[in-house]
Picture 1 (cartoon, rainbow, N blue to C red):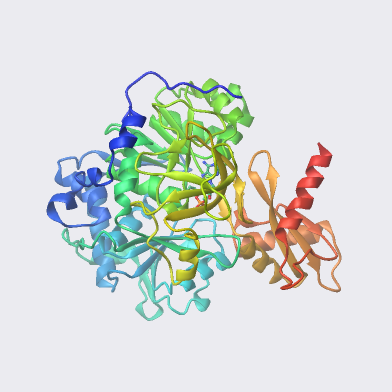
Picture 2: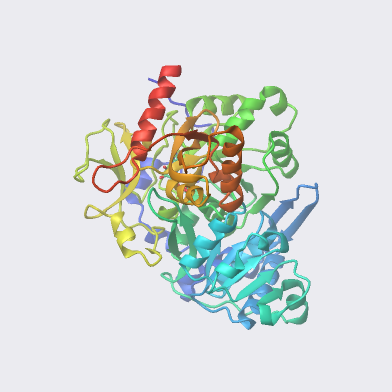
Length: 569
Ligand code: WT7
């Protein structure tokens, strides 16, 4: 039995968990929003314009640290102007309520401005992860027939325009010239030529589409998870209870908006609370991250276990070189947070690392360790007030405490997805038992209601907190001339949680070699995305398959792999 870690001294935004659980209703949160009194709904208004109207325009919204050391700030008033201006240009070029607007940009203020401008028009914003290559971009954009794309010259090279029949308008943040015939629009020239309509924002309804995130499961291509403006109710409230945000916080979420964490807790929740957001571009380096924390005086920090493990691996000597005393609250998401990492965090920062659990589909945090409550290392925490979770057996019966089963959530809740784009069957598949959303995660709950993650019930891969569908990787692999068949699994890894491992049957005429493996790794990296490329490849003469349908049995590959690992220990 591990002992629990008591909360630090202090007052937090949610002090009394038990009582709040009893009395809280989601309707209580509605009064926080402008629409409660006006009836006018738009996420971008609540995130930006409202703060300006309330006299907070001079506060810093975005503080950007570029890789070259450059630092820029954007106030809430400037953010309103910039998003109004871009929205005016987009509207002039035809973007309307309900249209999909893809945003493919690096982690810079431009990605925030682009997303919010699209939302101002009532469009459904589709942020793409910055590492995607042609296959990743194509499958996502074609699924919802994206007509509009905001990107830059460098990223545009990874957009296979010829394979995107619906794409009619490409807006380049650093484009030199507009070429209408080719559907290329230079934002610098469009912005310079066009006026800015300060009243461009369109009112929508709470159930109107807000954003779409493509996410991987164990089968098929990625699915488009659509969220509605009503998510703000839960995103605001978790920003308060779980992120514990106060007005003067400096907040850093390390995820790119192409992942749901980067959108929900990188853009929406902090802006709803009017805090200062730190944006750090470039690749992870332990030193760079510590510098960012120190330089910007981050107070609240949301990151992922892989990043913490990488920092931990650098040792205390490096940590001690930095003044991290402004930090007051740390959270983690996306993959299991090992107890060792929590103990390291206590030494390195004098703070607890608070694990949180949710999914793209759930739209906001559901289970979390709250700053005012004890942490049981190894547990993701308890259901937040307003949310009921349970562990179910295969028939949908609640299991007694302590037993492992399907982690399920009583549906609905405010941030639950609106739909899976053009896939009602997939949407329904999350609700196999009346009244319950079934997550696909396996878990157990203890007598106090703390939830302990036990793995996935399907073949989804989680590497560094990034969700990878084996099917997508297999599809890219078998498009290579050397590969006849592919089975892809997640192999346990001490730093990344899991790495992508591929078992391949080669076509006649191809021989196993290190250079071929290297080539296949690169092939996936350049066609799909670096994070999805198999770090380990094993050539086999055949793959285990189901007798009837001949489907590749990934579970069997995984079982053999785990067996091999345990023999090595
Ligand atoms: C899957 C969802 C939106 C959060 C970021 C990932 C895994 C998420 C935890 C956690 C262990 C976790 C689950 C979940 N996961 N949080 N605290 N401990 N596993 O969102 O890409 O939609 O992935 O990530 O398996 O189902 P996502």
